[in-house]
Every structure is written in structure tokens, then in C-alpha cells.
Length: 80
Image 1 (cartoon, rainbow, N blue to C red):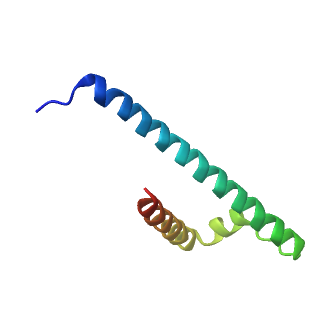
Image 2: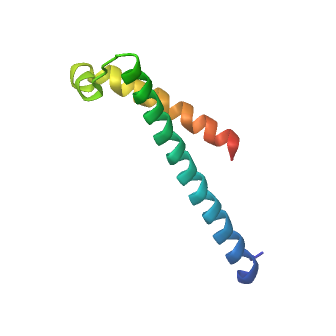
Image 3: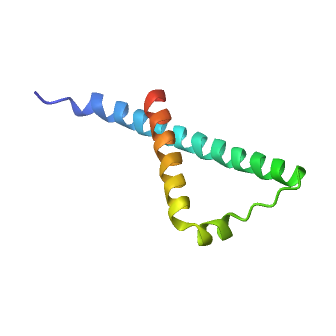
């Protein structure tokens, strides 16, 4: 049973556009969150060198990245 091209095309384009918009919004939210954390750290006088941390503790940084990615994926899965 084939889906008619005229019906599926616009629906797929709309779904793809919604997906792109969601990714853009998620990226903007992450950027704003990062900037907020960075500003908070500067206000409190904390100096956290992320690059230095990754160089000193690569396995811990990799584990943290996995946890953040997994959590983000679970949240996105529930939203969509």
C-alpha cells in the first residue's frame, strides 16, 4: 500500500521543519544556559578552566559528556 506523493511530501517537509526548529531552539537554550553558568561563576569569583579540566581528567570529562548527552536525549525523547 503506497502513500500518495502529494500527501506525504508536504507532511514530511513540515515534520522536517519542525525538527529543525526544535534543534535550533535546543541549541539556543544550551547556549543561554552555558552563558548563564559562566556569568554566575564569574560573579562568584569562581574560575573553572574547562579545557584544563578535560586535559587533566579526560575519562571523567568523557563520562560527564556521556551523562549530559544521555540526559538530553531522554528529555528530547519525551518532548517529541
